[in-house]
Length: 230
Ligand SMILES: Nc1ncnc2c1ncn2[C@@H]1O[C@H](COP(=O)(O)OP(=O)(O)OP(=O)(O)O)[C@@H](O)[C@H]1O
Ligand SMILES: [Mg+2]
Image 1 (tube, rainbow, N blue to C red):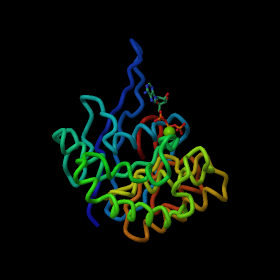
Image 2: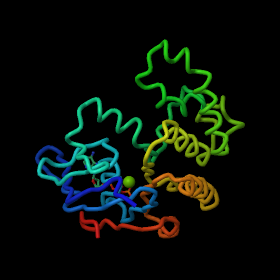
Image 3: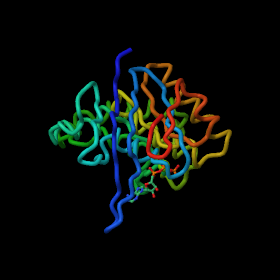
């Protein structure tokens, strides 16, 4: 299998006024097409930081090595290509869901598909899009919750909406930050089963977790320690 996404000697330092906090000192890792990789490490080790960099949601230091998608350095992307990368190539599941409270489950899941769509295209494609989102939500076990708002859902259901939203544009890779972190073991197990189904269907998956049992579900584990990936 070919390399889909890789990080090569990546560095990331947060600057808070005069204080600089080096989080990633030398992080290298590779994700092959179709793989399920877990990124593990203790709290504060930089797992979310690395995942955000992989998803093009944040920038590495100026003297960092590259993060590459299909061999292409993300830093060389045009603004347009960068938007496409974030919106289409990658699906991102955030550590704390980040659903929009005023939108329904169906609307939340459809949102990434509406980005950049003209009013005319929206009018002509909305039925197909609603069908696609409803079907996806049904496979995520939410067929009976389409018109509910996030506040009316359990934690596990919210995470399912976040996963459906991340999958709506058919991403090449799903990046999930502690997808079971806020859930009890049983509910978390259901989320992992859902991710495992998607992986079996061909999805490339990168999952951050601090839980060894969760990480055990992945095919391969990489560990961040002292800003380095072993
Ligand atoms: N925006 C920021 N500004 C300054 N420091 C930050 C920022 N984001 C993260 N950090 C610091 O970087 C370090 C790594 O944070 P990160 O969120 O990547 O850790 P993590 O491994 O995901 O932890 P957790 O398991 O608790 O989610 C932490 O020490 C954190 O305080
Ligand atoms: Mg984190």
